[in-house]
Amino acid sequence: FFFKKIKFIFIDLIEISGSQIFSLGASLIPFLENNDANRCLMGSNMQRQAVPLIYADNSIVGTGNELIVGNNSNYNINSDISGFVLYVDNNYIIIKNKYKLFKYKIKKFIRTNQNTTITQKPIINLGNNVKKGDLLAYSNVTNNGEISLGKNLRVAFMSWYGYNFEDSILISNKIIKENFFSSFHIYEYVCV
Image (cartoon, rainbow, N blue to C red):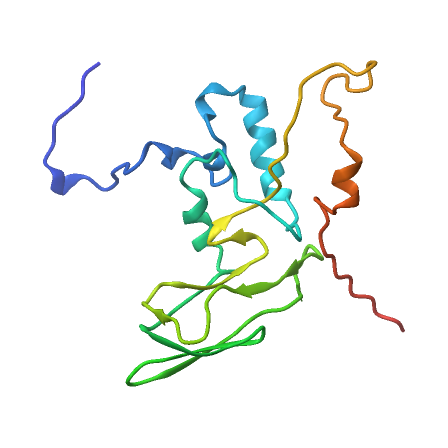
């Protein structure tokens, strides 16, 4: 078995990154090569099924793809022009330069097909100078442009009278009282 050398003009496909062979969900799992394959499959499926939380955190341990995925989610608003912020509130952002006025509508409580909501939050202030491509508003599935699907919790691996056998977990009452994992859901009903 040997590799054949050919001229680069005959090459159709070049692998740019080693993570290209993985799905989007799998590329967000830190230390993928050190995890069991079944755990990786479960992790990528769980990311796909995650609902947007009201108070989500960025991952403490990441792979570097979180910002790329967040920017490509089409839920963030990026500036199309360089200019300054003429107006900003919870409904609109207006950017002005010498030639044009750009108006961006901010989505609030838009129902998705999975009955969750998309809500965007502006992160710029009146009078700020922005460059083309700068982040103007992020959604509830991203935090400062990075995808954020959950919360960072302190965990302890220990036995507790057999109640946490296998994959069971025990949670603190504080998590429930402070709405750590709360999310908005919008259902549409038709009365005939």
